[in-house]
Length: 205
Image (cartoon, rainbow, N blue to C red; front, side, top):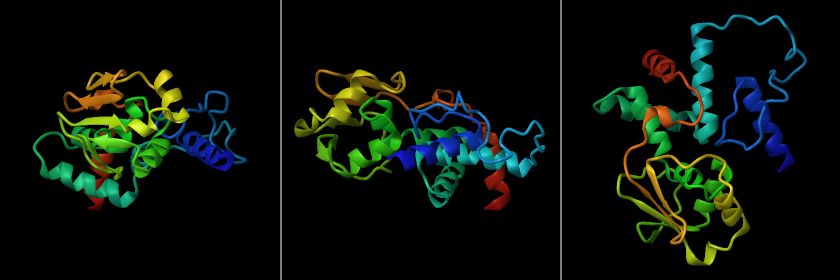
């Protein structure tokens, strides 16, 4: 676990930003990039490609998706009607594992993904263990009865990593949460210049 936390912090330091889905830790005390040149006062100006890569990596690391998965979602976003960047963020926020995290049942998205894969949740009353499922408006997720006393779920629900967003209706007595509307781009819990990601894929797809 220590190695994993260290690796997550290195990723956040390299990007210069806290990613709440990746880790509860903060880079506040060590904001410089890792490595022997991390504290150097001289910073090389990043190219347009480098800036776009940083924004893309923010999404990949926070939501725990592969390059292939992100590229597939970008293709889908471009096929749909509306701003591609906003649609991409909506799809990432609507993932099952992210919903479990944003509902407050897990401290991070990796922890949420593990809980989902071990069948601790019901989706619309049925067992579901695929973290990448995209939830729709009206979908309801609940904690399985036998899992409601698990320390990770109880502790996370008592002190969520983030404030629950408005698009989630949470019922603590029923151990359930519902998607009331589609998540919006400005509800992503960290700053991201998603238009750079869209431009990057427009050139490389």
